Length: 72
Image (cartoon, rainbow, N blue to C red):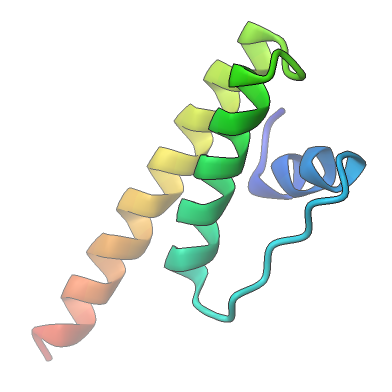
């Protein structure tokens, strides 16, 4: 997995499509779903680690962007 899109496609294999309309909420929900798939042993450790890393990185970017918009 290299992108958020890859994570979305992986989740889709399990019938999970996440769209709340808020990018930050979508990413947080995806992180929860990835964690649950890993706990259920449906996801290899390497994929889990990469997915969590990507999601947390993107969540941090979104939070920084939102904070920047609030300061204007």
